[in-house]
Image: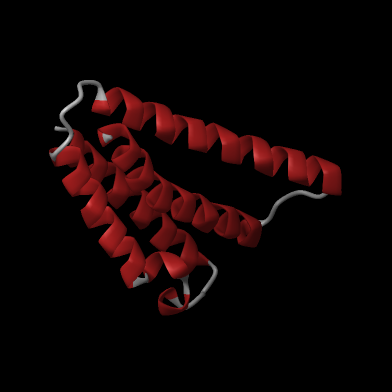
Length: 116
């Protein structure tokens, strides 16, 4: 169940990223979220969800996801308040790509630590 939820969330996150990248006419191949590393990390995370033995993996997945979302929203707000500028689409794409990298690289680590 948790693995299926993760796959659905990953598909949604990557589809949104693809839409954003196409909206600024950037090459998808030149970005890090389209690399082989992300695909491998998605597979590792899905397998980690499957072999979890402790209860509450969905709860921790939701907590990690919403925690990262709130962290990045606050970071965007604080940075642009300090710079006294309004973020444009290029800023949002940069922050979103950084969020995806932290999400897809950090979640397998959290799940591996949780298994120990």
